[in-house]
Image (cartoon, rainbow, N blue to C red; front, side, top):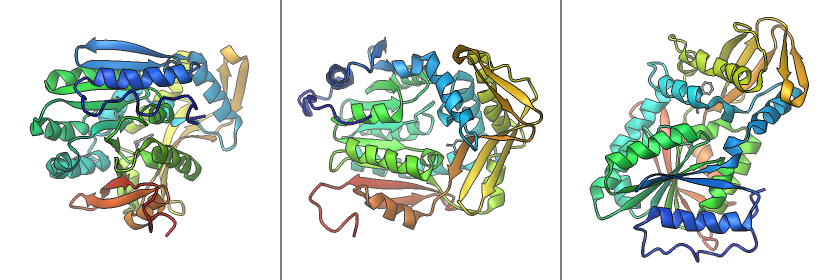
Length: 380
Ligand code: TRP
């Protein structure tokens, strides 16, 4: 799907000597690629002189959600696509999860970013910061502040998020707070964003929050191939990974006492009611999350308390779900630095440094895309 279009002008649209206008840069890149792939329509919305977002039609297509739910309920075990957790309500709830005392990953990662922001800005300061799954960009502010303090002219941030509402809010707010920052947001899938950002270089691609752990092994392989293709040699990849640790700590993080995570899970089923008229009775679903020791992953489900018929009227379909059935909404895999670095090497991503918090709960990997010709890496 993300195969490079044959007619795409290589680098022609991106002038490295003048990065003073992020809109011009991104607009040119997106324009060129939209011409090459006319089926993917994208709408440009200027928010203020230094903040623009592009919204992919993917995020505006109501059928896409219904079709995804239909697919997920037809497979066994049943599962729902986790990207649909993040509508406006879900994004808000997730932001609140990150503030819960049990949910350590955000704080651990923020600690790492705060400790190393200056060094990273020094090392990567020329790069356009591109971030997949940026959400409210809360943690990224630590980096943007450091980039901003370097103060040798303008710099660029390209947040990518599936939710156009949260993206617009973050883009406007960030531009308002940093007079030398240009924000060009992309509301689209990671896959589309990676295709569109290929010619933006030098770039530092951020993928924080251990979101990579939300992919199963096949999805992770596909994603890392897309990253490999999107990065030019020398481009940086900053990858946040949550580390394997005491199961009690892990399980608490996905079962906070205040019940915010529970509401986050249930919102996906509410969203099916709101947007698809799924007619799932209130109270029929409960949140379940536990550590799967064999697979090093937290698994999160909606469990049905009774027999329910889920309707998808637009598709003229319905699904009967039995009492006790578990519909998976998310997996969150946890990693170990050594094996992860080894796995990444086969995508021509070389580990420069692994940064961790004081309690070694979380790691931020600073990786570089190696050149085509560099010997001795990868397969090695
Ligand atoms: N990327 C987050 C994680 O894996 C997402 C997340 C946190 C999540 N809590 C959740 C997803 C609860 C579904 C349900 O940690």
